[in-house]
Image (cartoon, rainbow, N blue to C red; front, top):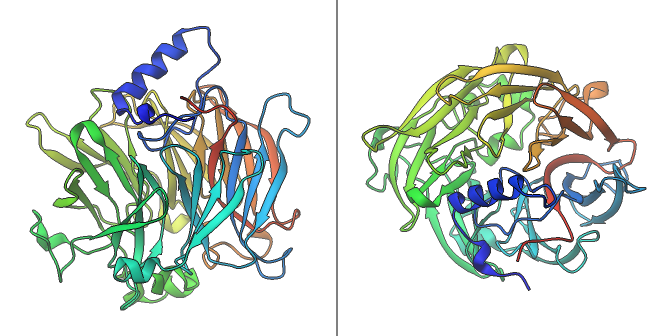
Length: 438
């Protein structure tokens, strides 16, 4: 039986990783961007779970959880070994495990439903358990659950929108691991500033939510509401009023009390948050999609938290639109996926204040998510951003690709064409294994 002693701090995780790397035991693995409260898998990841959007006219057209075998030496390495179709489309997007790693929760941005799978009984064949269909009602109007983040005995669900006007004003919602609603935390907005510092910046938008427990800091980023993300992107881009409805802030929260403390101006829709793992590394990275920048959120010498731009990724008008990012477990390498040019860029972030570009690789014609193994040797990429924002025609490649990383370059190991396999549009990827820490 899994033990909650795995709910230890990031510093404990980092120390454990170093000890393991220094021993003769099998290489430590897991996804580097996972919650510090999550039970970690032991040894190399065996499965990649892919939360996949259904596409009308392709296969059964429904959202699916797809399982890929990535065990070294397996006769089905790099192949799909299991799928489960929901029989509906919900704009499949992100998900996450409960802290004991027994359940995988997957969210639907359009339907606001959350789907729960048992990944403990048979990790190779996740079993659908139940869905949460009343998040909007229970939360008091939060809409568009974006992801699921493990906390001790519960999950934190950052949302993207609200039921009243379907703009980006939104909230964080908490559930117990057995799917009981706990509470809702609305993000500071012009109509409810909640007493935060820099209240004049508050826009109410949400996207990602991540915790640095030893500093008692919860950090959130901001994107856009359902009125934009369920509209075709060319139409959004051509509408000046719609383009004003994107977030441009990060919010620092007191993690223990869940009270927002300070709003930071980070223009251009800051998306994923990646906290450093080092026990003295008090910083996190994010990337802004619309301005194509890497930002650093850090604690200064006086103990105050700051946010500043540290690198320019490229010209967003030329397709360099940063989406997902992944920070290596040793905090030295940051991988930045760019959607429209399909390129992954690797930065040396040994000095987090001065990232240095060290590698570029065009993964496909479009690119969204990246998941990285704990030892930094394997990266997995997927293609879909949003059903109505993906490219069209022959440029609408839909894939999952596995690569190795040797510190200098990416080398492709396998590729799965999700269109040819009639599966849909692959989005979020999470790791699974039969071996989980105890």
